[in-house]
Amino acid sequence: MFGRGNKELDAAVRELAEADTLAFGGVGFAGTLLPVTEAYREVERQLDAHPEQARRKVDRLLEHGSPAGRAYAATLLGRVDPAGARAAWESLRGEPAEFTTFGGCVMGRTTLGEYAAARLAEG
Image 1 (cartoon, rainbow, N blue to C red):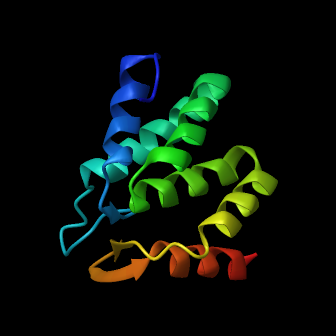
Image 2: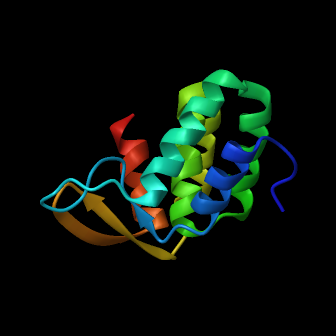
């Protein structure tokens, strides 16, 4: 579904596509990095190293990923195309699907639409 590319990028995008949790840093008291967070960071690196190839994967992830995967994709898009990221967040604003979020030790649940609205409100 996500096409050809380098192994690291492909593996990271697969991980994000199936994500059910959104965490950008360490979680829990130990600050453990989840595999999905490591995958997000790999795609960030790939956007710098292979911008065209990684951007295509991010665009597909935005279209076909899990709710958390789509949130990761829109966030990644903000690194390379702020206007495109804003349009992505706008398109996700009405999505009712839920996922888990982590901010350090704090776990929560939100809908993709609520998360998108919050990102848009941040500017």
